Image (cartoon, rainbow, N blue to C red; front, top):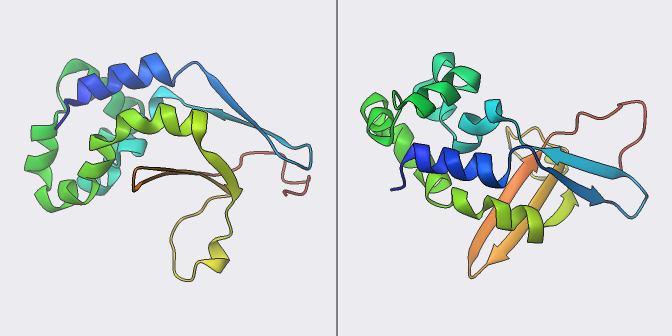
Length: 146
């Protein structure tokens, strides 16, 4: 298992302060931006701790200072950690996903039962490993989406 600080350094170096731009066939342009405050959410830490002190900027700072580690998360909720550990194991592939993935419109109502609230999905298959990232559009709702 990779150390959280290593993942955080990867996140800062590869994803933060960059804009990933996708152009849709109807002329819509989507800019995907990764914020430091979203790091813990991307790792799924909210599913382990159920505590706001461990997500957002506070969680980011805890990882940076070494106060939150893989061991810490396991001690908080081993079963919860087990459910999201794959996010951490494959997190270093997110840059590849952003550069090589395909963008699709996501329709939650077509999937049956899902709690996922997203507008778009970036998906890429790499050697029988399915990488995906759901995106919620924070665009002008007055404009129709594709």
